Image (cartoon, rainbow, N blue to C red; front, side, top):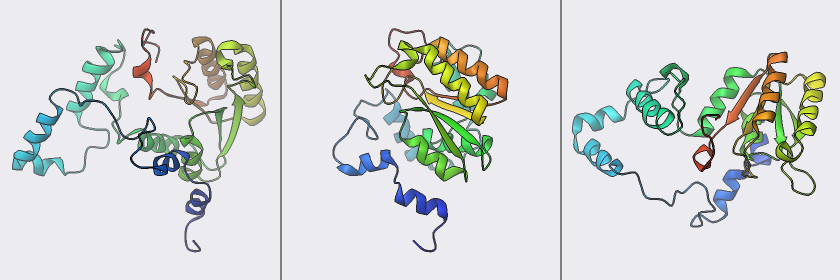
Length: 229
């Protein structure tokens, strides 16, 4: 441990909660990490085609373009964003491809935060955020605002004024550079009301701050409008 960086020591002393869950017992799914669903039609056939063709297989081991393959981005826009979620205002330059949310969140933090900046998070929120913030940018401070009451009510829905008042006070006193939260929420599974999201966006715009919405669980918005996320 003596020769490790301060960030590595901190990560070792405060291990990532998600990795700890995954290490609890490898054969237990615990609803994360190991998908228990059938693969999409044609995916297995595409893998077989790639590994059976020497030229395709050789090309598959190259470094990818920084933002992702244009053909993949175009297919994602058409088949997912446009057809499934009706987000027709997106263009190819609005998408970046990454190897999962951890890599993309790390890139976002490095691209937007400097040492000494403040990030505002709900309390509670996705367990991975604190470890990522501590590990990606040095000396970033974290402020929290209440998202769940003592009675386990989801405050953005049951008491939106309280949430927005607390966010406004934190902006005035702490000047956060970014507000980061997931919708649908993790761990509550609740969808953040538009009233609260719009209020946070307005406050962040007033102070020139970033708002990062993590929509990893957007496919579970069954029966709801999907154009807002």
